[in-house]
Image (tube, rainbow, N blue to C red):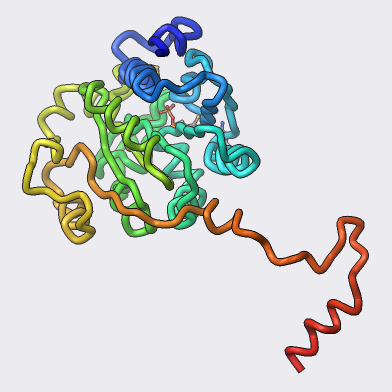
Length: 286
Ligand SMILES: Cc1ncc(C[n+]2csc(CCOP(=O)(O)OP(=O)(O)O)c2C)c(N)n1
Ligand code: SF4
């Protein structure tokens, strides 16, 4: 049986009190519960404070370009599907520069787990407004307050065909590690957005603020995470933010489709075309 220390490479250097410490702890706990070999695990991060996670967690890792965690993670998974692949992005990395990759990964349902560390600000670059910042949010990039609606990642994920959608909070690492464990066991793309205070640059969305403005779906015995309409309704309510497993469905993965026995290629590796075969195919269209 693996232990926590098997995944602990070095001591992190995030600011004291940063929410990402809890995410690191939850990730190690989930890896222990899954009894995952560090060498079977690949963590691909984007650029941001969240991106330092794979410097501290013992596994294979790749620190990708800003917004490009998912294309790299997808490439790793498709070249070796036996690996457990986890992508990690910030709200800027996932929902701003990387938004296209987010939507396409969801609709493909590629079998990777994706943590989006939502601190509602661009932290590494010293505190600019992000897509999840609330309207009116004052920062160095919006000194008169943000004039935009904020983006709801899990709701967008549901509309994009997501098959596992959850939201955790770094103030509740026990629930978070359970969600990560479930996400990693899920066959398909598992989104886990994590509300995570940036204690240095975001003085609005603090631990207290998140506690006051969230509620836990996992404590609601009437809630059925397999009911898409219920999930949509929960995600559409503006007042409080739902935490827990929001939506899950069984759907074939991208790998199920891509690794089906392919039809014989009509072009050889050296690019010579098999003319008689090609002519036979073309006959069908005459
Ligand atoms: C192509 C590109 N554009 C912009 C940047 C500058 N940049 C680095 S991190 C970052 C945003 C970080 O915010 P987020 O993704 O939310 O991560 P956090 O630091 O909050 O964890 C930006 C804009 C970059 N590195 N590369
Ligand atoms: S700047 Fe914010 S997100 Fe980055 S390490 Fe410090 S507290 Fe954490």
